[in-house]
Image 1 (spheres, rainbow, N blue to C red):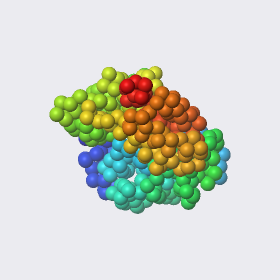
Image 2 (image 1 turned 90 degrees about the vertical axis):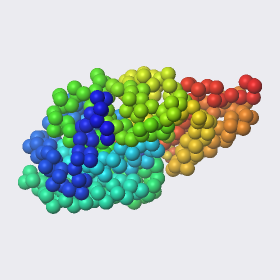
Image 3 (image 1 turned 60 degrees about the vertical axis):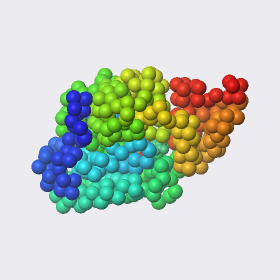
Image 4 (image 1 turned 180 degrees about the vertical axis):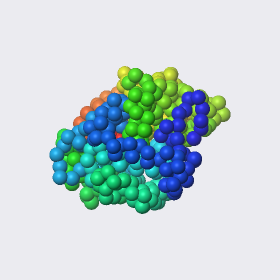
Length: 419
Ligand SMILES: Cc1cc2nc3c(=O)[nH]c(=O)nc-3n(C[C@H](O)[C@H](O)[C@H](O)COP(=O)(O)O)c2cc1C
Ligand code: SF4
């Protein structure tokens, strides 16, 4: 992590400063003080603070976290569950891995606080199966948290009992999607489902479940620590706090950066990332990962802000910024993205299962120079249909890149009648 005038160390405040294998290091740096504070607060007070902070989920969908907490607290169930989504399957993202490898306890502490607020008795951390180091570190961190009395029966004498364990994924991208993830935890093959009911009402084993991203749980801890008012002073009117950015691709200084909301994509790429190697020009930048939009150089002054991006019909997902210089072949990139979604589709619903192979067939026609105007119309209508009619976010976002290229780089889709 680099400390500059554009960066802030909130979520990342302990990275490389404490030993992730040592709970004592974390406690000496102020760790578990927010939990002690939270255990003196009522669930409603904690939730009011999170609502007042303006925090929105950092897993990609940006749902207001306070509302989600309230949804679980107000749902009826003989047991409630909490799930931390650490699957991080979206290509280009690596922020959750950093968090778990450099400071596992902030995530765990945030989870215990959230569990106490909603009344959850059992929590799971669902970690991407390939993240061997994260899995080892988080398991050891949980062991130490039990040893210190931060987990288990009657936590710190508060009367609150809460248990947690690690479960791992099998490498499927769709199992990061909340319904598929829940099915996976239940021992089934991960398939998504129609909403409602939402997991807040009927989640794991049909019980009310709070499912949030790693970075979201760390932010819950920060809100209790700093107070909602102080937290919400950072960022913009519509986007509060900071965001971890996974910067990668053709950039001089790729890596993880934490920035307050409001900085522009250009500042992230040039001021933090040092620009493009050999002074080459930027061809396009994909935001969020494979499921995100591709924007041209002319849109780089867009600030990192939910509303500003939404007004332009784009989003930043969970914070990947993938830079591509002028040597790339856009059709080739789109083909690779289409292959990814074709491979990862769970096959449950028709628009995604049958749409993805056809997207690839049409892209190949453009690549070979044989595409007609009819092929263009078919690709556009298929992309729109998948976006509107797929059951889950995988199919809904599979053609986001294609639709953004149609908007910003229409010359990519030359047909025989253009020649
Ligand atoms: C195909 C697909 C994959 C997803 N993968 C992840 C993931 O790896 N991590 C994650 O936090 N959210 C992922 N999500 C979003 C989750 O469904 C869910 O919205 C999120 O975990 C909620 O957490 P939040 O409220 O903290 O953002 C994925 C969504 C889709 C459609
Ligand atoms: S959109 Fe794709 S991944 Fe999601 S349920 Fe349908 S087939 Fe499965």
